[in-house]
Amino acid sequence: MKDQYFTKRVLSYPTQDLGAPEQMLRDAYAMNPAADLWGIWQGVFGLAANQLIVVSSHSDSTDGWKAFHDCEVEAVWELKATARPQSSVPLDRSGVYVFRDFWLPYQHVDEAVELSRAAWQTFEGAEAYSAQPMGLFAPAHALPDSQECVLHLLTWYPDFRSWETSRQSDPAAMRRFIARRELTRSTRAVATRLLLPSE
Image 1 (cartoon, rainbow, N blue to C red):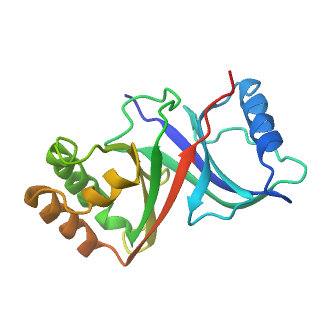
Image 2 (cartoon, rainbow, N blue to C red; image 1 turned 120 degrees about the vertical axis):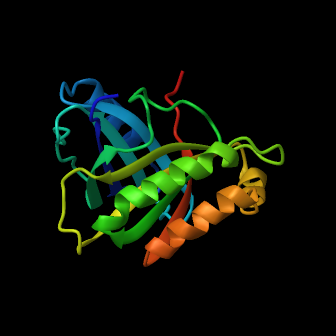
């Protein structure tokens, strides 16, 4: 896949009733020629009950976002795909999606991506659990090597049992995950569920 850009936003709304905001987002991206909606997620833990995470995919560096009434953008990241995804097709699989962010110096991004790619070769094939890394995103624009940035990982699990079991993945994968952790200052995880379009 040629360079594909993604924009990740955390959006806050006045209430916890997110049905209308979800539909508004879908309608807006359906009419947006600059970008496609990759997914909308609601929190299970780690995200406020009145918040959504929305990720768009686009071939240009920006996604043509238009402000919405009663919607506050809490955070936004302009990103590019690295090892995954291989396609910008919107996600449509139910289950648990864990967003994990890694804070690390920009100079270590490529190494962290390669460690992730190598670890997934055995992480995904385990018999004890099911898991699939869906995306690993780096900053869309180059930064000074000394500057700290955020690497964004999104991993799918069918349920929390698989997520918990995967914490003890095979030794080869664990060695690479530990090496990746040593490149980072901190990490943060948010568990979510993908909101699927209504029939």
